[in-house]
Amino acid sequence: MDCPTMTMSVSPLSCFCMFLLCYATVLNPVSAMQSCDFPAIFNFGDSNSDTGGLAAAFNWTNPPYGETFFHMPAGRFSDGRLIIDFIATSFGLPFLSAYLNSLGTNFTNGANFATSASTTTPPRSIIPVGEFSPFYLDAQYWQFTQFIYRSQIIKKTGGIYKNLMPELEDFPKALYTFDIGQNDLAQGFFGNMSIEEVNASVPDIVNRFSTNIKNIYKLGARMFWIHNTGPIGCLPYILATFPAAQMDSAGCARAYNEVAQYFNYMLKEAIVQLRKDLPLAPITYVDVYSVKYSLYTEPHKYGFEHPLVACCGYGGKYNFSSVGVCGDTVTVNGSQIFIGSCERPSVRVNWDGVHYTEAAAKFVFDKISTGEFSDPPVPLRMACHSKLD
Ligand SMILES: *[C@@H]1O[C@H](CO)[C@@H](O)[C@H](O)[C@H]1NC(C)=O
Ligand SMILES: *[C@@H]1O[C@H](CO)[C@@H](O)[C@H](O)[C@H]1NC(C)=O
Ligand SMILES: *[C@@H]1O[C@H](CO)[C@@H](O)[C@H](O)[C@H]1NC(C)=O
Ligand SMILES: *[C@@H]1O[C@H](CO)[C@@H](O)[C@H](O)[C@H]1NC(C)=O
Ligand SMILES: *[C@@H]1O[C@H](CO)[C@@H](O)[C@H](O)[C@H]1NC(C)=O
Ligand SMILES: *[C@@H]1O[C@H](CO)[C@@H](O)[C@H](O)[C@H]1NC(C)=O
Image 1 (spheres, rainbow, N blue to C red):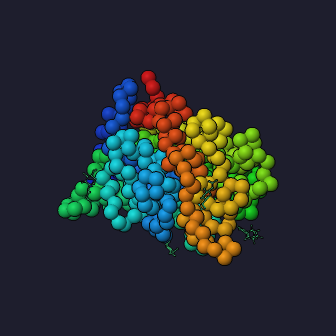
Image 2: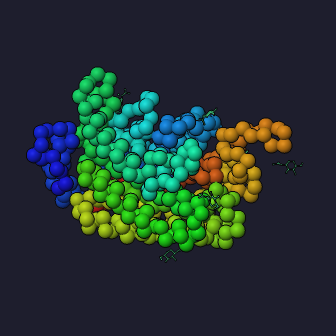
Image 3: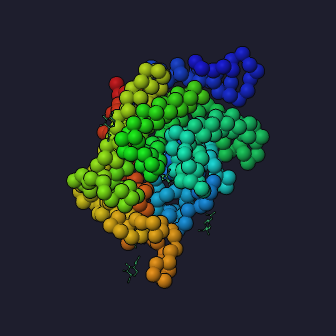
């Protein structure tokens, strides 16, 4: 057990570690087939699961972001809910507050450390001068470290704070969810790296990911639900930027998707190793790639249309260009144009050229929550068990 605090005076963190020693014996052996009762979710990642972190740090999203579900911008890069929102709701938990949001947050049932544009490795260019979030995965881990400790100090001050912070004993019982990697690939593609060079950087990215999982485990996290990365080569921001790319039968940029597949292959291997290194931890690898990709190969079967075209964008074959992005007001040929939503986001896959619609997120959630796309094939509600026995 990696608790260095046993001989020190009792701090909230050491209580936490001692508690874990007891809890680990309860977790193991697994009580077969019982649905998990996660009191909290702690999420790490990028815009695929950012519920308001980047928006709080820099600038709140503009309309029409959020219009479908929240009827106003909600800090998410979507017209509505994200996969992580559907995950929280499925456990009867409220939507996760972004750790970086100083206004109206409630962390009783977890916290979200994800920020849009986050990478796993240190970002080479940072918003607002550059393009990526300063809160890369290591930074999210540092924030989580102080969150455990400071939330308990704040809780003790009582008053209104008492009911805004999680219980100490909820940390080892919580679900830890991850969706990150897409921006590491994007950083390479949009930087001056060849596809082969980006591909060659994958092992480093995955190593860094594994290190963070181990570090978060050392803080007491036990149950992990890890999404692989989606088919980046099907997104308008790739398709519009690299028009010379060779397309596959679904119209996606083949080589870009192959790098994503290699990332996923390495991630899956890394998780096999993590299960050996962290025997107490049920770790579920979730193949989000395959579910998202099916939206491009068989959109009509699932009730979607124009999967490769942004619903909210402007210009070109993919409704995505440098003229302006979703929510901007731009001047084109002397007239002002507001870049708003398409007519039916409920039948669309891509929202703004980079991110998925709520309808697509719901579709992906429905598929991945069954366990059919998980390794081991554990449904979401069983993700506290290491396998089905
Ligand atoms: C933030 O968003 C508002 C509303 O769209 C815009 O007017 C303002 O320029 C933005 N600020 C920054 C720093 O980007
Ligand atoms: C925060 O959430 C908890 C759990 O959902 C709830 O009991 C509590 O009342 C909330 N606190 C505030 C101030 O809304
Ligand atoms: C790529 O290289 C060009 C030419 O050397 C340079 O102007 C540009 O800033 C580079 N872009 C990035 C993202 O490094
Ligand atoms: C990426 O690297 C792996 C391992 O070397 C190789 O098998 C794969 O073909 C490469 N993919 C691309 C798109 O370069
Ligand atoms: C602006 O007007 C010209 C001439 O009518 C047209 O060819 C061009 O496509 C227009 N540009 C845009 C961005 O609509
Ligand atoms: C492209 O985006 C515009 C908003 O600028 C939207 O009105 C239009 O419906 C979109 N086109 C498609 C085909 O979705």
